[in-house]
Structures are given as C-alpha cells and as structure tokens.
Image (cartoon, rainbow, N blue to C red; front, top):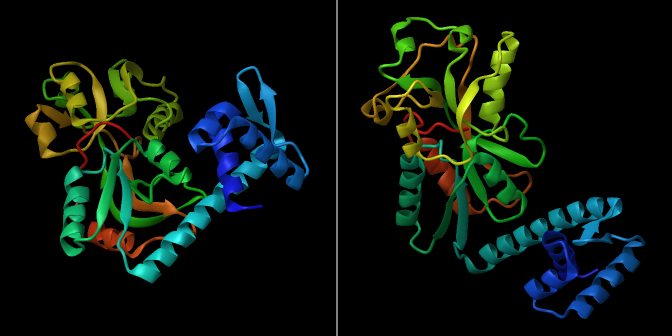
Length: 304
C-alpha cells in the first residue's frame, strides 16, 4: 500500500462521500472509487458502506482508519524531521493556545522566539482547549498551550509550564460579597454564566455541587467561546462566573467571592501539549523553554 492510499482513505472519511473527496483530492470520482476498492481488496474487508448521505465507515473501517491516521501523522513527522536535518530550515510552527492562558505569556514567548530565529514562521490559533486537542489529533497543530485535561490519555504528552487558579467571580455590588466565607450552598439559586458541558470546567463545577447534594448551577448564559469581553455581562448583574483574579477584572468592577476551596477547587496546571511520540521540532522545544521562563499572571476570561 502506498502512502497516498492513506490520503485517499482519510479524505473519504473526512468528506463522507466519494464525490466530495475526489474533488478535494483533485482526481476523478471513478479513479477514487477504484482506488478505495483496491485498498479494500488488499485489506480483505469493506472499509465503507453506502448511506443515504454518502458513505460511512464499517466497524472494521473505523479501526483501520484510526490506524491510518496515526501512520499518516508519523510519516509527516518523519519528513519534517528529515528536512530539518538536511536543510537546517526552521520551517513553520503551528501553535494553538487557550483563551484562558494569558495572551501576554504566549505572545511574549512568540516574540522572543521570532527575534532569536529570524527564519522561523508561526501560525497561531486561539481556541477552547477541546478544539485545540481535536486540531492536534487531525495533525493541524504542532503544539497547544492549554490547561492540562484530566483525561489526557495516551494520545497526548504534556510539558508543564505553570500552575494557576480560577475563582468564582461576581459584581462588586453583589450581596454575596458581604459574606466572609461562602459554602456552595450559599450559591444555590444564583444565576451563572458558564461554558457548555463539553468544557471540563463546567463538568467540574457541576460535580462539586452534586457532591454536596446540591442542585447544579442555574444558567443564565451558556457560551461556547471565550473572550474577556464576556465578563461585561456580569457588571451590575447578579450573575456569577468562573474567571481569574486579574487586575483587569477589578477594573471592570468584578471581585472574586471567598468560596471555600475545599468545596470547589479551581487550581489547574497549564502545559505545552503535543502528540505523544510525535516529532517536536527544535523550534517547538525552544518555544516551550521560553514559555516555562515566563511569569504568569492570573487568567482573565471565564471559560475552561
């Protein structure tokens, strides 16, 4: 089987149809159909079956395509490493970072990297952590700077950068600000701004309430994106959210509530996350070193 066969398989799976995949690959539909049949003949089982909307993977196809994706990424890593050895070129470093990681840390490190390596080029993406991990799995990112997921598993490896903490935040005029020590039961009935259930922080908060035998937080606003401007929604309101205790938040009139950390622990580890066993270029290694030297300030946004 040739390496291009992996491209055929992965594109058909991504597009969900022979026609769309053929167009994306720049080949005719009959030629791609013939190639898939040839691959299936070599494998000895059907990898796709027709559906009303195109084609879907068979159970055997799911297993095979997952392996094919790993092989394709390993092959791409090998080529990158050999090119770096042969030419000494710095190449392109594709970095994603979570909105909950202070921009100043990431961008200062990137600026220093570019000053040190004039030939280096960067592609930056700012996404929620779950999206960053999906992009890395697809081979579209070399590294993500994000809170370490609790279920990092075998697919990713983490190089620790720093630890920080998030807090329950509210407007400075919120009645709960007058209480010196809060339990989660004191927050029952309050309205919240929180991310969707696909974000680990949301599940962490819900679990903390359930452990105390309390109802989950009542949402007023649920969001699937993270920008500092979201905190403007809290100003003058009764809503609560999770954010960093940064000076920018104080300027907005937002102050952290003194919630018992024994009931809601919001400490986290931020790391440089790469694919386990993947090629980490010298450029990426240097960026990790610069990030590790950075002195973090508290996160300033309410997600993750």
